[in-house]
Length: 212
Image (cartoon, rainbow, N blue to C red):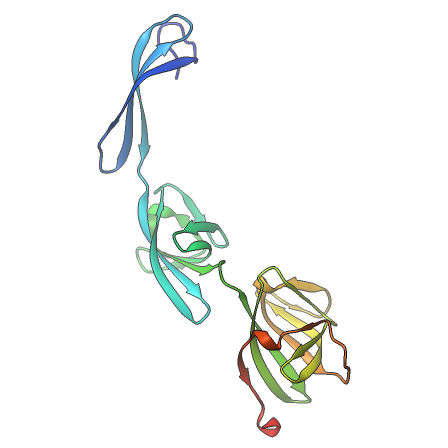
C-alpha cells in the first residue's frame, strides 16, 4: 500500500479491524508511512471461501463432505485438494446444470467428484491359464510399481507379468505406479523364486471353475 502523500510503499500498521460481511473479508487498516510519517486509512477486501460439496471415492465406497474454496478458483481434473478427510484427486466436476466436465471455475460447480489419496491403490490381477482366467484384486502402496516381466506370487500361483493396463493405455514393456494401474496380466510359470508376494494383500478373488 502506497502512502497517498509521498508514494512510499513502506508502512507501519497502527490499527487493524475486521468488518463483518457475508460474502467479503474486509480488513480496515490505520497505517503510518515510514518515510514521511503521514497517517492514513486503507482496507483490504477479499472474497470469502465458499463451501462446495465433495464426493470422495474409496474403491467401492464413497464419502460425502464439504470443502471451502474461493469462488474464482479454477479447478481441473487431476488437481490435488486437501479436505477434512485428507488429500484427494479431482476426477470430474459437476456443474449446476448437472453436466460433468474436466475443468471449471469454482462458482459454476455444484459437486466435486474425487478419489482418496489416503488409502492403498487397488490393482486387479488376471492370471491366464490359456483362456481360463483367475481374477484377483490386491491393495498395495500407491507409490509401489509393477513392471512387465516381474515375477510375483499371488495366492498359490507364481506368475510372470506380460501386460499392464493403466488409466490411459496398455503397456507391453516398462513399468507403472500402482496409483495409475487398473490391472496387470500374467501367465503362470514353473518357478520357485519370485520378486514379491501379494497373497496377504488380496481383498477379492474369483477362481475359474476348473480350478475349484
